[in-house]
Length: 458
Image (cartoon, rainbow, N blue to C red; front, side, top):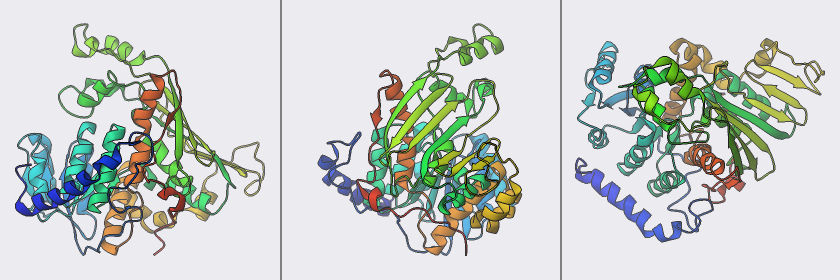
């Protein structure tokens, strides 16, 4: 970390010392259970001093990160002060975007994989937004916090349970935010269903279904840059659910996971891994590098979670088979069910009263149950874009909370719990689908956690 100045170095040293002093307490049960002592004060419900202006540093402005250049330039009270990406092509694109918005003072860094440490060294960066390949999420988020910055990281938050614990410990030691940016929590439909759940429309919750079903074989043709250049290789290294959080994040919020309930254990099965090899054989020459890989990630993975309160959640992953996109977004209660893709609802009491047939006319439901945050910001979100507006709304809400002294809607414990499906599903698949315990990243605080309210009314 030679690029750190003295102030950043002292912050890092103090936080590292706090972690080291308690390291011995973290070993027993750190993979799956509750560590005996926290690494600092819990950050559940963390509120930091209000910021009049939020100065943003972006690490990674490629396929995902380029959207953040637009979003933060359009949000009042946010200002991009630094951008880092080792790819000079995408960095130049970001530089042009900023100039078009009239921002000619931001700093740019591209000198190798560790140039981001120069960005972390800056005093005019309050939050760091990390939109890089997955392997960088954990080290960049940790170093951001140790440099005194709030970390906002793309999904998944980390790849291993050890990395997830490390981010939890670092957030507690530094008392800084580490939020995984699960944009789907800010989709209109997901926000509406959260509002429905909070009003008790479905009765007592029993079961949920979540998924990431998105045919992405075409990314295998991205060889030198873009997502497929690195993501394809995970299909040769992992067999489980490598991307669980888009579907899982919203249903976890419906069920108050980490805020009255928590994930207990998971069992997982994978289908054969056939589709990627067949696609490579069809689309590439026989001697092409994609035909020399051994694809082991099952084309379809299905995992089932049991919560401490006894509820069940089914999660699926499929980026290989030819089928329509779906996140399932199903929530079942004692009074009925909502399911997405396409949206439909059936209730015993309320609505048509006929739970044997789906009600697919959603307009009356939007009129009655649209989330106040969407009512307030939905049109602006749709105008500014990003997966139908959810990306912009997520960024707006992050800045709003920081400027108004409010707790973020998701915290480090949420990011860790949702991301933990990846390593736990891999472990379960390799062990004949035997169940694997979730760590309690909150160390028991979930029992008294306050459920996420219906924010955005004011």
